Image (cartoon, rainbow, N blue to C red):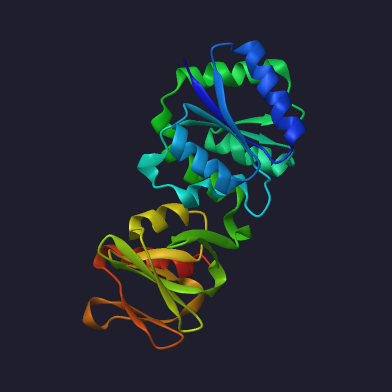
Length: 249
């Protein structure tokens, strides 16, 4: 019996979708309806659903920021976005092959989305979501969410200078000279920041915000000098990408 979660901040819209699912897919159980993304994240972790209906426009967070709360291997459920977004956003969904439903949701469209979800492998979402994020948010990304001891902290990406791997943790350095240690590895941040053009993986230990770059040095095998004189190593296989970034500007 398939299990579903609805993440939707409009109670009437959530109840209407639940009623439509009951009619079209009687065997599907809606385990919970959540009004915001943090509630939805907790519900996904608690219930391990087969399918998640996710509103793209939610209080505080965009639905696409679901990426910020999960590692790639944890995206083992099908996602269907619900949106009242404009033509550009719809194009972004289509380019990334992520399924979506335009509001108000039509019965035939919902039926087709359910059929498609039943045919596809859930694991595909971890490959398609970063593409959607790149198309949908790209330069409009302003904040990411990181786990801290007593909850989640919202970070303005423009304040981040670079991220450094420390084993299975990541230390984030800010333009204010402050830094925090987060219990996620650097690969996680490479994944969730894939749609933010200024952030580039320059070494197995570093992701740099190229907005703070001052100079590329050829000494010691190659390094990136930041505006505060911090010097970050650039691995040999990443140098071409770093140079290409500035050529593309």
